[in-house]
Amino acid sequence: MNEILRGALTAGTLIVAIGAQNAFVLKQGLLKNNIFWVSFICFLCDVLLMFIGVLGVGTIINNSTFATAGLAIFGGLFLLFYGLKSFRSAWSSSSAIDLSADSKIIPIHKTILVTLAITLLNPHVYLDTIVVVGGIAGTLSFDQKVNFLIGALIVSFVWFFGLGYGSRWLIPIFKKPKAWKILDFGIGCLMLWLSYQLIQFAIETF
Image (cartoon, rainbow, N blue to C red; front, top):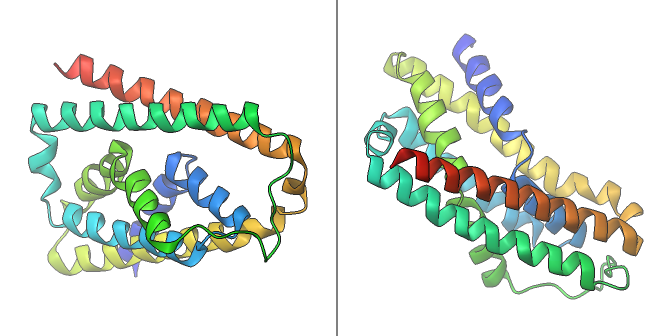
């Protein structure tokens, strides 16, 4: 039980922090856009990456300068693109987005692809799930690692589905155009900051 709690606290500290993935899940929840699949894909990616990290495979990536820097540059450019897109949305929107149940839903396959991109092209996800979680679990026995992983994944499941479906409580606020402009602008700033950090990290790595 102690290792389950330890895994839960570790994952909670990392996952709850505001990031590109959480901002994306929040927005899709507000739009009621295939939120089950968005939450499920984010959780499934955590299952895969944390499993890899806990087994110690993350050490290989962490010790490779080329792999680490390349991943950071690629992710930085992707977040830069997403951030600029959010700024454009903030300045071009002139009316509130339709949040009713009858509003247009993006096709599931497109939603899944975008969710995978936001998750897997963000190096911070690998840093948190593989390097940090894997590093902490590295000192544990196999049985303890299993319990640690269970605790971490419970938190991941609760967080992503809670964020996705819980965001609907904010819908009354986001019926106003100004609220969407503020959200898109905030997401844009976050993406650019993360992009800057990743590219700077890649430069310093070389």
